[in-house]
Each structure stands twice: as C-alpha cells, then as structure tokens.
Image (tube, rainbow, N blue to C red):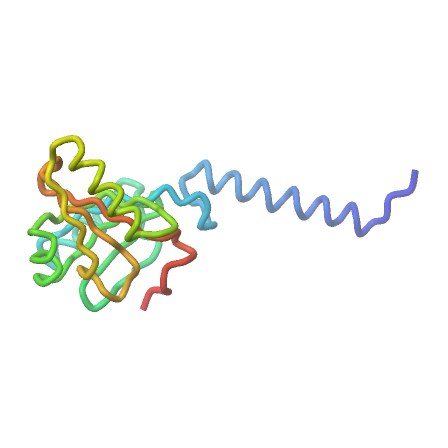
Length: 165
C-alpha cells in the first residue's frame, strides 16, 4: 500500500502540534482560548499593589498572560485564568465597593445576570443587576447580599470580547 509522503508529513506535523498543545495544557499554559471557564477576579488597592501581587504570583508559577486594560479597570490576566485588577473609584462605587468577582461565561451577559438575580431573589437574597459598571465591555454584574465583598459578572466568551488596548 502506497501512502503519499505529503500525507505522512501532514500526520506527523499534526501529531507534533497536538503533543505540544497537550504539554502546554498540562503545564497550565493553554495557548488557545478554549475552554473558557470564566474567571476569578481579585482587586488590588493601588497600581503598585497590583504590580507587586502580579510579581509575587509569578514567583509561585502563576504568570501573567496578557493585560486587558480599559479606561475604568487595569487588568492582568494570568495563565490560569485568575485576574488581578485595579478598578477605578467610579466602578467600585457602581458595584457598591465589592471588589472581588466570580466571572461566568454566557452568550447573553444581560440575560444571564437577570436570571442569576431572579434565582438569588427566589432564595431570599437581594440582587441587583448593574449594566453600566464598565461600558467599554459587554459585562453585566450582579451585586447580592449572598456574598460578602464579591460580585458576579457575566460576560461573553473571550473570543467575543473586544481586543485589549
């Protein structure tokens, strides 16, 4: 049976790419935007505090992947999906000074936030949907007394978010 060399080369290259990707994935360095499990967001008290925390995390193997800054929030997105940010005073005020966040991926952020707020209210908690905390991004927030110091945020998949500046 004759197998053309180009088919063997294609299979070989595909195998190498898959092996490299698998190694990167196992090492926590997935170069692809899939899967997107959302994020866990922690806020620093100052720009120097953010820089120090990012540097400290790197010492322990959690390295910065890229930054996604807007006019309202400076973000360092780590390889494991953790986000260290520095929100503006205006954003913090809109979110009732709750600085941490659990980020969830949904196709429609506003509908996801409204459904979550309805769910929390049905369980006896207060919940408020906030759509204008960061107008540059399609993110909807829910503040609730079910959490202390933490909001929920609903965003589209990372491939549907605007490119970082």
